[in-house]
Length: 109
Image (tube, rainbow, N blue to C red):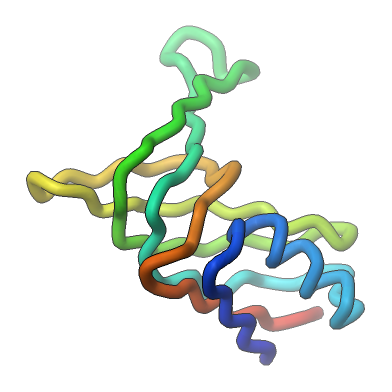
């Protein structure tokens, strides 16, 4: 198992670079935990599962997620806990890690 810790960086760009450096082609993202300063996440409209609704959030969130790496590309789904005891969930496209950290635990296949 690999632990990738991300600080003061864009989460998915850094994760992609580290996955490439480590030579991970396929694997499970067993756990993603941490907090971010902003993030981009998508969900699907109720009437068309082939489309994405991508939304940018410019406020901090605590983060928990899982995913996979297929053909060297990370694919992460996450729940972002935000002020007001709310959760925002979906496919994670981007996240800015600055104030805190993100830790990604990967089990290669």
